[in-house]
Amino acid sequence: MIIRQAVHGDAQDMTKLLNEIIAVGGTTAHQTPFDESGMISHYIDPPALISCQVAEIDGTVQGFQWLGWPRIEGDDFPKGWAIIASFVDVNATGKGIGRHLFAATVQTAQRAGVKTIDATIRADNRSGLQYYGGLGFVDYDRLKDVPLRDGTMVDRVRKRFEIS
View 1 (spheres, rainbow, N blue to C red):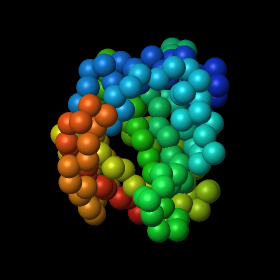
View 2 (view 1 turned 120 degrees about the vertical axis):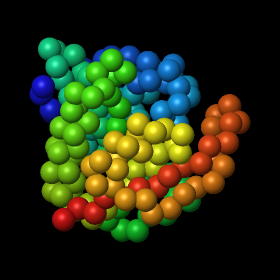
View 3 (view 1 turned 90 degrees about the vertical axis):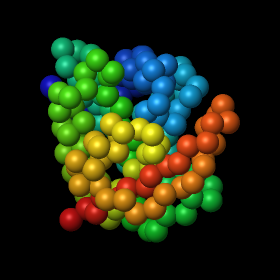
View 4 (view 1 turned 30 degrees about the vertical axis):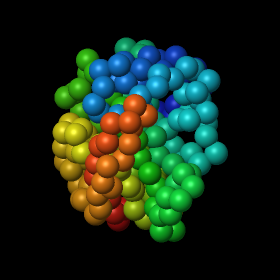
C-alpha cells in the first residue's frame, strides 16, 4: 500500500470509488454522483485544501482522505480547526486503509498548524462512527434533523480529534 498526496490523475479512480459508495447509500452525505472535474474541484484541488491523501494498491486508488479548512458559510469553527472526510472502496474495507490514511493526514495537519480535526458523520453511518471512534475521535455535538438532498432527515454526530 502506498499513501501519497492525490493528483489530478487520480480523479478517475477517486470518482469511481466515491460514486460506488454513493450508490450503496447510507454512509455518506453525498447523494449526487461526482464527475472527474467535480472530484478535482471538491477534493483534489479546492481552495480550502490542507491535504488529500490516497491509498494506492496495485496501481489503483483504494481509498482517500481529505482534510481542509472550514469552507461552508455559517459553519463557524474555532481557529485551528480542520474538517476531515474519508472514503474507502466498498470492496476494500477492513484492510487498514483508513488507519494508514489517517496517519499521513495527522502528519500533514501538524505541519499546517491544525489543532483540532472535526469529523461530522451521519448518525446512521455505524461504520463511519466506529472508524472515527477507533482513531480516538470523541463526540462533542449532535446536529438534529439535517435534511439530505432527497429530504430525508438524518442527525449528524460531530466528533473531534485533538492534535498533540
